[in-house]
Amino acid sequence: MDTIRWVNQASARSGPLERTRAEIAYAERAAAFRRSRISRARLRVRESDALLDLVEECRLREFRLIPHSLWGAVVRAVGQVDPGLRDELGINRDPEHVADVLFEAQELLLDRMRGSRRPELAPIIQLFGNREPAAAAR
Image 1 (tube, rainbow, N blue to C red):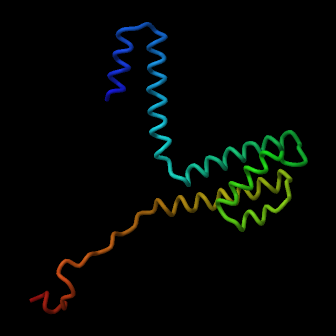
Image 2 (image 1 turned 120 degrees about the horizontal axis):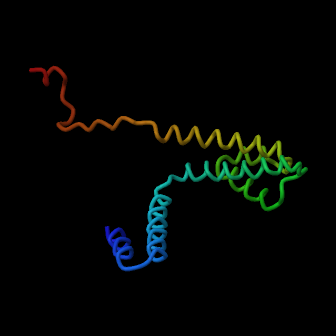
Image 3 (image 1 turned 90 degrees about the vertical axis):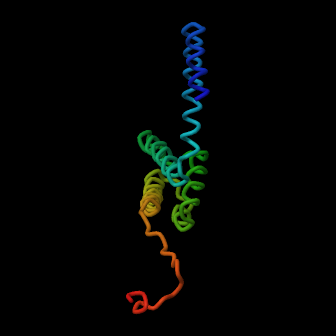
């Protein structure tokens, strides 16, 4: 509320540059709030998407091996998802192999996200202790 009032006050008392600056500051604050509310699984999916884009770029440029800096990020991301996939990744820096392992990691992440969003039944709490069904019917 205060930010909106500040943006409106800035637009009333200043020129277009000041209004633009105030609007950008407001958008950055709103984006920071949204970023903090994104789940870890969704962040890992976004990271794997970005890594896949970079690996695809390596394939298009016909690199024989993934660059070292990208390789470190891939190993770290895959290791956070599943240590078994990291072992499958091994030392093979071939872009085809790396892309396949990243796709497998992304599949695991998406399965986990789907499972975490599935509704669950709340536990039933007994209000009056254990009573016999026949006694309750009388």
